[in-house]
Length: 331
Length: 288
Image (cartoon, rainbow over all chains, first blue to last red; front, side, top):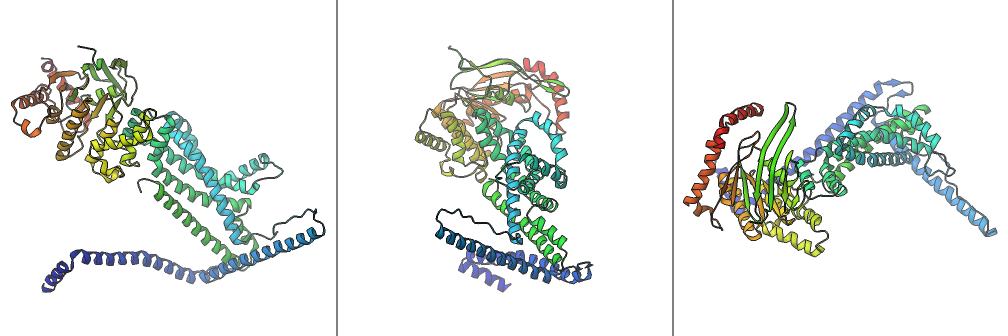
């Protein structure tokens, strides 16, 4: 009792505010500790379980890789990438030297620099996949948001198009892929193509599969604008364009972003499947090639790719979340 | 007397419901002078908001029509600015930007950028909200947001200001405060105002004229009471002014004796049927 009295009088003497802040920072520390420690514990338990369980699973390519093998192979993949880069750089320097010699003899000679013909490395495949997924996702957004706004504003149109959305939404990317491939090969014919056909095929498949959540959410968000705000817009006689840009779109931004995040997640999953099936460059092809390769390291390398795919998916979602917090007014 | 500023003639309104058409408004006839402060009072569901929305142009009357300064009203417009019950500010815009949206739209051509800026500030000062110009509606209290809603409406320089229970969602003290502000602003600008209210004291204190509406369906103007009290009015001194008390009693008599309505706490549908029956019972009294 007396200690309690003492403490309270001391707090009063030294300023209750400071004592409070100290306590709160203490609590804050404990909370961030919890936030860091518990996930770490989860990951460690998983790694332990994986390490113990993996050797029990035997396949024709040896036992299933544990975390240690996967870690080693990840390093290996990175080393291969570095080596490949060095070779590519040397290849270019070699050509430049040769070109310089040719030009010294004959200043009018035409010279070329060829790109390095070596196979793309794991890191190259990641870059390809990222570019493809972003392109497909951006195209999906560019279609889904305006279309969603139009559908949300027009009940009749929405009633007409809704069954189509419901039917196309659950279609698997693998079903679209042959059709997209055929259509792209038939229609995209040019002497000097700007994009690779395989890139277009993957990108369009990603777009077809990932636009639905954004489309549906945009439609719902636009249809659910507070009627009072719609009345304000009518009283002000806002033009259609101003109405959409100043009232409808900002009001539905939070729900549109929720759709965008789901869409991006789907886009990433779909892309890997499409790349595997179509053999277009990217992480999916890497996985498939390793599977076909069937060396003793293949499983570890596939596992490294699986972890990379998961981690990239997570980072993509975090980027969208950050963007949402910056743009949406309710965050 | 010259032509009325605002005139409603034979306004009828019916809504289609699954059970057939529901006649909300019977024959409404009203003439309102320029600068008049008119309150519409009546039990809930009697169609006060419908009248206001017809004047605003947000609803189209089934029969009859509405003329403002010689022009028929058939669509909404900023010359009939509306103050909504729940402020209806865009939550993603700041206080300043909310008023700016209106000013931009109405005075895009007639004012320079500087003029518009100072006009926005002037209106925010009028409602005592200049200090919160850069806050979002979510960061200010309901009373403050309602002030901004009023500033936005006033900034349109409307010939009629329409207010749909503007203080209904506020606590009693904030409400009294805003009523006083509104009286001051009205004294200064001399706008024509139509205000919907449930509050008898609010109606008597603020209005030049109280339109009492009968219960629906087919609601009509029951009584039309002119409030002849000197301005500026002070709620404290008026509290035991015999004329004020008399007016107050007139309205109360209308609402609770002539147009008595049983409000039950059972679901609304049941409530409406009792309301209809009650209306039949009390209809002769209303006409008397």
